[in-house]
Length: 312
Ligand code: GLU
Image 1 (tube, rainbow, N blue to C red):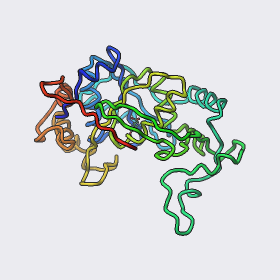
Image 2 (image 1 turned 120 degrees about the vertical axis):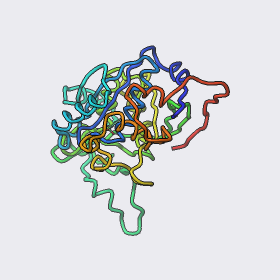
Image 3 (image 1 turned 90 degrees about the horizontal axis):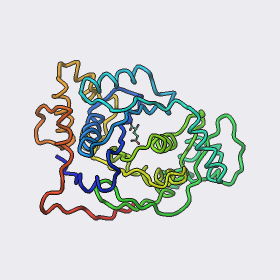
Image 4 (image 1 turned 30 degrees about the horizontal axis):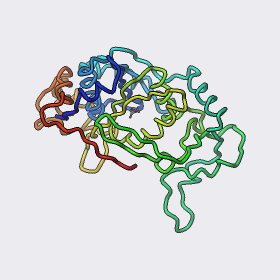
């Protein structure tokens, strides 16, 4: 069980906060999603909040209607029912509007590079982990095959996460000039989630720690998009397929559909997810309604909030 201090969280959030469960319909639901659902529904219940179901369809090339339908059915089967939605990221002009505002303020430039152009190092050089901004001052015109990037300024983004841990992230070093609209004309993950979290009034973002490095740059984007009070971000441990290997949606041993096909019950699937994420000592059955008990508690006697500072 993850003993998150719910009273401390509630003190930082509005009453009845809005959270979101935001799967990308580029594959089927797997146990990693179930762990995220345990946190989202569990913490939202503690906080007397509301869960919005949002399908992150910004990647229209990889998103598929059949996955939207399968995820909807599997969530329902597991017993995770959203209070609001579903919504998706079908372009309704909000992303273009956000981009236009950023461009007008001089924060956007046209990039003519493909990933290959900057990922392949010159002889002897180390492989860069983020885009080096080489098109920043080229003054390229927008056009087919060109992407648009956010001109990330140097400087630290400091935030206290939902566990009370202080993070100092340097988005330029960590993320580089992130893409806002890619070469195929699709809205990027960073732009789409930031605009959606703003427009949908998301107060509390609960997601896996694989996305921790995205938080600083998204906080910066949030403020530049005119939202002075950004959400609180909480990152939880990921479910591991094997030590050191992240799960992918194609892992057949962890697909909710595949487990269903073996005759597993919803409670068995949820229990397995909780166990594989270290929330329980055994893989016994658990119901969606047990989520709150798994992920949080009020501060007991002697509870000390972590005040570590983490540099990113
Ligand atoms: N759609 C993302 C995913 O499925 C989650 C994005 C987010 O929480 O910011 O991993």
